[in-house]
Image (cartoon, rainbow, N blue to C red):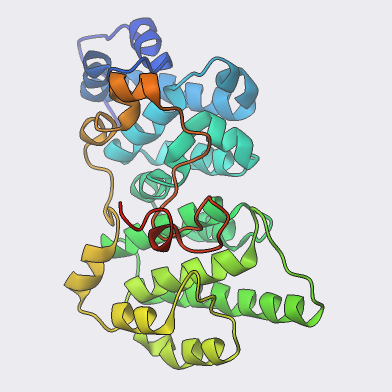
Length: 302
């Protein structure tokens, strides 16, 4: 159990400093919170619970406390925050984006994985929920991936679970083609299938390669999102080469270092640039609508 320190930080001052993003990172307040986590963790947890219960209030106020709560809880590996993080990811995607913005596609999975302790079943349930937004499901997958890479869950078990999702999705895709119903939009099974294939390749799950080749022959692999040659090269590469291709495949260990580098804390960028949608990961569908992976489309030169 965390033991409160002799120094009692002023939560009202911390909350005020972290409530809004004004173009500069609030180093003093975040250091105060991090250095005195036992004294403030209940306040951060209560703020996150409130944000999930009344998301529109936090969104209308542009209140950034939920993001700080998630990243600090991840650094501290505070498992008490995990059920609330999962509840947040069960909200409609518009509310998730309003509360944590780019974090849903770049960081949430790593934060969830870092804070989580014990059975991965709740995370797997979220990843398997076909009614959820693709980005939400991939965030859950990211949590499982980072836990396996960090050695806190069994890699073979996690890849077997991901392969089972691919098998289920392959059945759905075949059925949709037979009925001539092609699913598109935020729950697009085609995008999920191909993006998850890329993750499985990055994990080096070579035992599934014969089935992947069959899926390619069946026309289930979308060449705009993946290609067999690239999948094979990644899957059969060395562990070091595969990890080098992955984006931040480790836990959040320094919330301040990570968050302070965000573009929203650069005053010049804040004044000239406003993001219209969540930041897109390099292996996710390009927001331009081409159907290609971001890294093979608008993100090719980034």
